[in-house]
Length: 418
Image (tube, one colour):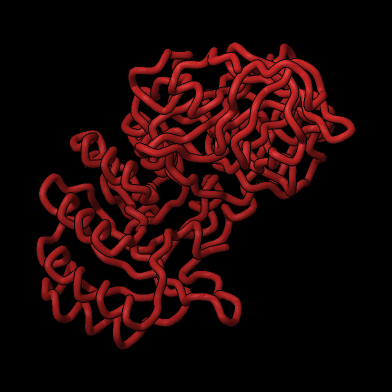
């Protein structure tokens, strides 16, 4: 047998994409498969053919054609035939590349492997599987390989609607030159996940890809939400923990540490001027997988302001958040809960109030925070707290312990609305 691959390539086979390939699963495209048992690559589709290389279990390969029980596959530096029954088609999952500045793409799951290129933050990548050592096998357009798993984040979905008379062209990458995957009809409801340089990654049923952000409209922007959607019978009850007025250089990191201890996700409604002053804390909130919301620039009562000032309060804060993490906020909370139809008319993201006000800002008593929660919590509750008070951090763990024992799951606001 020809031993042509070094150890890392023997362990993990990387994709060699054909020119003009489409996204996995698209009609007529090459398709990524996982190798489900050790095998060999053959020169011809025959058991007696010349063996070209070994192919290890859990490798990923590209199948370019298949017939009569054989598949023609490609890996880095090698191509040939394998029996079709040693392969399994893999359905990818979309993850957001959250690492500030992006990350390096490698040919194998090792920082010592050959570098393929650089993937930039804010993109949605197709993730096909993982490898030992904290690596994920990913695809973005024609770029495929391994990146560190900790650079990825499960994205938050926002329900939106196509607003383009002739429909929106769906592309493989966030670019006008990206390969066309199809067209989404006007008024189609989609789940949008991230916006990058004027392009938004969306999913609609089995279709997924990038469309122009201007061709989307939010269907939730005129509504105000103070509770989440109840779960179906037999599913875990949910609550959304929310923290206003931060970030705080001192208190917010304490709250993040407690949330991580209980594997709890939360939503942080941030003041723009605090975002600008504490970018590193904002980045940590985002990297820990929490949702970030807009809470205006300096906590003004929007109902009392002229509309030009309202727009400035919201836009300046959204821009500050984008400058910190490369993503715009996904939800909005008006200071003091003060809103009206005029204020909401400018919003492009949902306005969120609350089901339970713990009054932590008023009493500064950790025990009272828990008492308010115990007395009022139910499935779908949105709980209001503030990450600028030390007493809130002091009382948070008891709140998490209580809710955990009551069978609640901790989710973001966007998740609890769905």
